[in-house]
Length: 450
Image 1 (cartoon, rainbow, N blue to C red):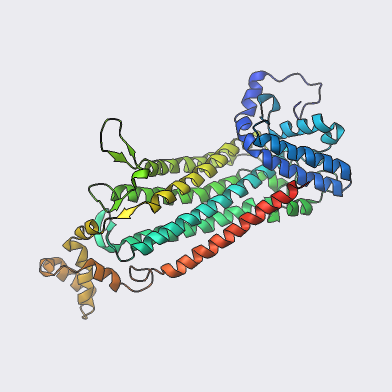
Image 2: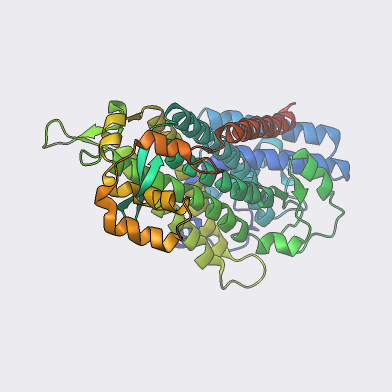
């Protein structure tokens, strides 16, 4: 039976059942562990307030842990008749334990149940994304250190502008991704609120201990107002996806630069053979497919963000079935971002720099601004120096690009990128991220202990 059926209702039309279930049957298969974990925490709290006995709690825990074991073996498959993960698990408990299984839903609704599942699922995925984002930052920093004094033309309007370096280009992405990390942490904090106990959005007439389930599930805080719990569905998902979209925008820009700079026309970088695929018609041709796909998948994540925001923008307070449509874009965005980070990191490790080609690309005009400031240092007003160099540039001698990039020594320039301090920050963040990941996993494992 469905959780909402009472045995007296007429059977729902099969097509209606298919339509309302939507993609939930496939998506909810990923939530089995989290629904079990949330149910164990809820049952533990029900025992504390006298709804369950010690033996009933133990029976429920054993049956719920068995659900995870069956799921891991591929023997707990959600089908259309189950409707969703919540119904599948509760029916299993009722079939296994009889009346004890029927008690598990006391004090909760599928509305706060799915919120718990998604918050825990998202927390686990965000911790992995955070770890992979920091791994990419670390590899980019190593790449920058390895090529610290390799000159590279700087571009504006896609025209050669001023002397730059491979390291400046690389560290620009590192610092941008560390900003992405700040956004990701905000999204993590908002997601890390316990919705359990809000029921359908208006609480229940028994004294639930929401602080207890917050602690048991390892949430950072309790989401206090029971109605806001329901109103925040979609809102928090959109914030999470927004943070992910910023990561993907950086990955797309980085990928685009590498694709461009590795063409024969530029020849600045060489992408490793393992990360290029061939053509079905052109022998010897190799393509940067991985980077192109990352660039393309960015649109998926930004589209998912828009999908969620468009879904929730005109909804009234309280739960509406429309909110079901925010689940898939959230899961898709988490998966795309995580996989893209891993792929780009692997590609970065295997990229080499063509220093000779980079040096050859320095034409005389790229040094015009440096020549202008030489005159400024002699006391000539900048605008006069600008015009003088513009009119007489053919008489100036071309400098060594290596010398120029070392001369820029104020903070943030080619000669003073602060790589050492950024490395320390990345190492510190990695350590903290790993710690949070271990603590979260330990919390879940403790709940599953019999």
